[in-house]
Image (cartoon, rainbow, N blue to C red; front, top):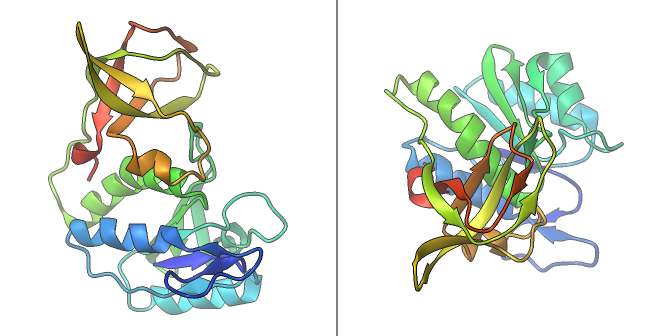
Length: 225
C-alpha cells in the first residue's frame, strides 16, 4: 500500500505550510485489514516517475496486490499511470463514476495493481465499488456486490447522463418515515462528508435528476466492506 504526493505528511507529524495529512493510507490499510488482508504499509512516494516505477517493481516481487492512492489523474506530477505502463500494463484507466473517475487497474511484473484517486471520498468509493470485487476474486471469496435498497430522497439533485454517481447521505426520521438527506458539502476532498453520513445513494447512468420524495437506491456503509 502506497500513497503518492510531495504534499503529503504522515498522520501525527507536524503539518508544514502547503502540506496535507495522508488520511488515505490510514483509511485504506484499515479497510484492507477488515477484509483479512496482510497489509504492508509502504509509505509515501514522491512525485518522481523513476521513484514510483522502482517502488512498484520492488513491491511486486513479494506482494499479491499493489494498491496506490493519488497520482493517477492527468496533472504534471501524476506519475503512477506512466509508471505502471512502463513496468507492466494497464487494464483500464478512468471510469464514468463520480467521485472517483481517475481510477486504474493493471499488472506490474505479474502482480495485480489498483490505482485509486487522491481525494479521500473518491478513494473510499472506488475501493468499495471497484477494488473490493477484485480482492474477493484474488482471494477466492464467494462475493456478491451489495444491492442498493430503496429509500425516500430528502433532497434535489442533478447529474449528467452516462455517469454513475454516489451521493453521501444521512438517514433521518421524519413524521412520515425515514428519508435520506444529502450532506451539505459535496467535495471529494471533504473527509467529514463520510464520517457525518450513514451511506451512499447510488444514482445509475440513466438518471439525470432526483426530486424530493423520489425513491433512490441506498447503500449503508455497513454493507460496503
